Image 1 (spheres, rainbow, N blue to C red):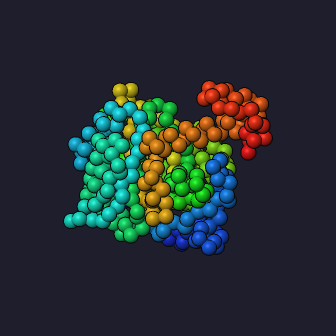
Image 2: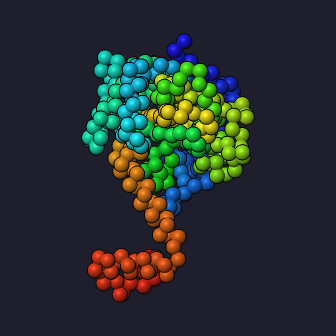
Amino acid sequence: ARRARGVLADEPRLQQTMACQVQSPPDADGLIPFDDGFKPSSCTKETRIVPPPCSALPRDVTVLRDALDEDLAHEAYATCVAFGESWGTYLRYLGEDEGGLVLEKAEAEQPALEQLAYSMLRSLWRRGGKELLAEDLKHVHGFSMWVVLGDVGHETEYHIDYSEPFRHSDNIIATPVHAITLQLTPVPEGFAIEGGTFGAHVEGLDHYRLHGYKACLREPVDGRPTDDWLSCPGWRSVPYAFNQATLIPGDLPHAADEVRVWPRSLRRVVVGINACGFREGPSEMRTPQHSRLFKRGLKLQRLEKKLLNLDPEKLKRLLASLLSKHKIDGSRLSTAEIHS
């Protein structure tokens, strides 16, 4: 069969897991305290999480084979490889028309890529996505889409998906309604890939609370994403395959282990798609993941971190050099003012 659905987890265990995930009562904003071991440098507020909506997807990994029209899958691979780097966009959900998604494309920063994202999402919807996801559209503001290229040595650290701009502004975790990947590399039939396996844990936020942001609360072993990677019953795994989609509820933590064997002549192309809710969607729309604006923000964050870690005297000399270069009088600045 073209579509292979995951098996729903044991129902009593599932109910227990979902009850555990909301351990603290929500605050006045409907948010729940949640510590994953990470605080962004841009916001020192206590971490809170938006309670995830109930999804129509099974709490498992659902796999769609032949997820896109085949010609489009090949075109998408070629376009992404030719572009040569990661990119991202956001498609605002407006409704449905004769069973198809009505989407508003982002402003034309990269028109060909915006059109490709639009075509891929509409194709995925026609070829099985609607059957699986339509019931949840009432929760969806829009779709964040991005592409990542990799090769041997590439891995994806353990994490849950959430809106990066939203967290960095208020330290609020807002997971998507759904988290989807598309695998687009036409790996030759019979080639034995090693590594790069996608895995998600069905215990969701319970598992993430234990392991934390990028597994910072429990150190991984032997180069694996977590210390229990694919070795306990809650893990579900899917090897990489051309024109294949994986779909999970947005609060399930996931990762991909290191790619060890891969065809030399091909890039490893993965598309990420998050169905964003109404709380975090506008932030994602303004700064889509892996977009040029998003990348500029990351560079500024790294620069800020370096500056904050500089010795005060070194920082003072650097600032004096910059002031001199731009012919600004900095004689009244003290080291204390520099750090204020």
